[in-house]
Amino acid sequence: MARSETVGAQLGDARLSQRLEQIVESLARKPGESLPDAMGSEAALEATYRFLGNEKVSPEAILAPHAERTRARCVAAGRALVIFDTSELRYSGERDELGYLTNEKSRGLYAHVGLAVNPVTSEPLGVLRCETWVRRGPKKSRKQATGAADSEALRWHRGVEAVFAVLPEAICVMDREADIFTLVAQMQARRQNFIIRAAQNRVTPEGLMWDLLDDAELVTTREVELPERKARKRQSAKRLHPPRSAHTATLELRARRITLKSPNASKNRNSKRKATVTKLHLVHVIERDPPEGDSPVEWVLLTSLPISTKRDMDFIVDAYRARWAIEEFFKALKSGCAIEKRQLEGLHSITNALAVSLPIAWLLLRLRHLSRDDPDRPAGTLISPTMLTCLRVLLIENKRTPLPARPTCRQLTWGIAGLGGHITNNGEPGLIVLGRGLARLIAAADVVSAMKRAAEL
Image (cartoon, one colour):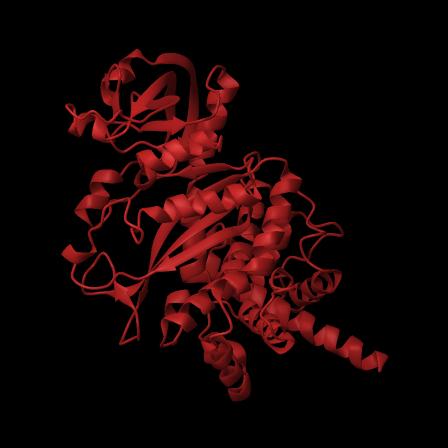
């Protein structure tokens, strides 16, 4: 499963490629365990440390086979969303070469990930891109203009350009941090599709953008189920993501065409330099009659996609709502794969370990998604025949509900979670218990495969 996502990595040495497959297989067996526990022996652990610290091994080369398989899955799906977001990876203790995080007392690095998702089924298809960086020096010295060559803001530009090179038809979905005029203008210029949540009250020939919302045409109304959102600890997070109750929300979807002017249009009114403009579509999503005490849902989305029909608008809203998949992906990476608990010293080793863990986190997320969102889908092709046989035997031995002859995705996922100790009455299985069950299943399948090979000798 996870190992197949790394086959074909070009590391310049067949022994390194073979070691990568062995490391991924060991980590997939015990995704939430420490490296010493996951590797199983001192020799394997030492070999893992040497591999991750090897200067000839790069995160890009490790991830390349998975990214190519992800691209193939996107092509097979016919259309794909690529959701971009950034997450902090926080490490305790003294680590070489790590930088500052939002909390100045913490050390770690940032990971900017592009996760591909099927727009129809919301199934995670894999990771197309991951860029990492660290922040150096005092906070004031890190503030840089968007146009600076080493500006953090340019990660959005690099990410969407890389996606366009391999999947020009993909739709890039980004949150408020990606509301950058040059990013929007460049994507429009190369006819790359996108959905970006607006964060700034930009200048248009008709006035400021927020003032145009009331003139947007009502295209359709729809109901969506909103989950509960608990209060955040940080004040900035509370302002951006206020708490709310779980409820059915009635949303009005309004749209209009707009022309945006470059930011210097408002700052240099007397300048002879002509302002850059870009034409695109604005979608205003607003909740009507929210529950008492809840702030209404309100999104202002900038997009290149058509807005004429109810179907157009529903697709845009659903595509933006699919952005939540990347939040769940980061949870899988941190809790399911325990990436922040890896006892590695140098930045090179840490970023290589991250690249190894990305396909495993995707696998955990995909299993859970299929169990929840496509529970009746036949699961016969998700795991190998050997693993399926092992799962049947292990479930019977552990006095768990046996699998039917043709299990569904839900039955398969719950069976794997059962091996990890999941209790049915506790509801949907979480990423940690799913990771434990997957570890037991892979280990059992490896034993069976080894016995088959021995019998053939």
